[in-house]
Length: 301
Image 1 (cartoon, helix red, strand yellow):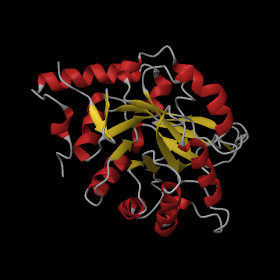
Image 2 (cartoon, rainbow, N blue to C red; image 1 turned 60 degrees about the vertical axis):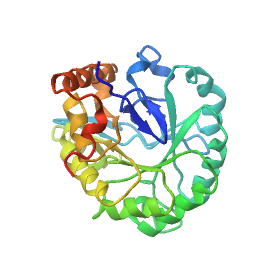
Image 3 (tube, helix red, strand yellow; image 1 turned 180 degrees about the vertical axis):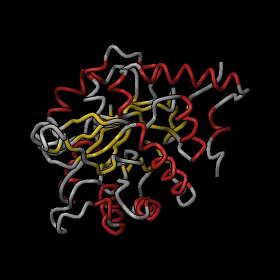
């Protein structure tokens, strides 16, 4: 049987498939899923204090994907560690915790709270949040902010740090290089693309905000391009995200330069999507005489 495992931060992942932040909850809602088909999973984004999120409606289906403006509602890091983590730590897959803040101080405090939690494999830092001390610009849109924030957080924790990048910038590789300069151990890209839809019957936006993050099949070419361009410029691993629904999608991301991938919207359509993709990856490799996925890595570069 073909080997579809990958290595990340020196550790073996059973598959390159990682359910993305926001689709897997805190992990306790998916205990029925066979964990052997997951490389890891990423928790819902966590903040220092609990957060209610945005008003409803905050999810809207579109022709080729979905819009969301959930607003990062979450139970807070303390509650996660005390109440959620005990339920998921023995599921049999690695746990990556996504976290965020609205100031550098909040990011640092969050990292401190998670730094010594042994069950946590790695941290993923969401930098799409507005920096309230710098006029509201997202941390992830300013290379200097990214480099400084990453360096500050790396001083706090020895855990591998993944910086999750926004596509809503002119040049993603520049932002990725800034994260690398700051000490990031990997980057994940892309986060959702800003979008909007209007219900022509009610004459109102479908989201209360009314602009949200767009995800789904339609953003895959944007994401593949971002991975391809970024892989030419940085040495740290890239975790590809965006419109992945099939084994062929995964292979495309690996050829563009991703070490692993995160599955987002596809999970909502089928919670067992990682099992289906894993089996199809094995079939693809066997049919094409590929002994392991490493041979596909950066094939297009």
